[in-house]
Image (cartoon, rainbow, N blue to C red; front, side):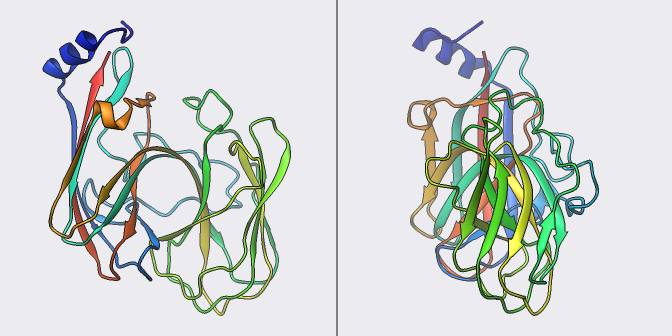
Length: 267
């Protein structure tokens, strides 16, 4: 049954048993305002694994069954995000995303890294990647870096576009993620074709991850939580088999223990 009235939402909340209680020990941010992924963070659920290398040719897509995904239960009808609460001893912001596709093993040399058979996004994405984002993800720490990073990708209409990080972060930490600005006018990402370094890093490897943002919650004060209800969140849909995780924007350069409560309704 679809949601057509406020009573539908209230009735679904009254019987909702689909709650995810998360505790993640997220590694320190390199700088205030930089992003860390919860994917490799220990806690509840446990840490995820390193994605397949970019030459694997398969296995890049992620689902609720992928190790590291939040303990998500598919709805009998349709899951909607109805509440999200969080607290951390460090001020910051949490972005809840659906992790769709990820690869690793791209190196530090000044060259082009071409993904072998990138394939399609998971079947739960029915709009060919509208609204999806690309992030550089550090599965290991890397050495000093300079120059630009260019990601060649396909847009939702299967057209070729390029997103450029004009100045990569030098010596990125493990777990760090950097958003790739998409080409002007872009509506999303369908697949990643290749990545080009304009300069050589001194060491380390990195990968690329495609996500679809779902909701953001700000924690502006250390040790004081925040809670958003369905009306504030906008009741976003969460598709079946979603691979849910957090991206953390730190308000300090220290590690953050994040506790979150995510409640869904099935309607």
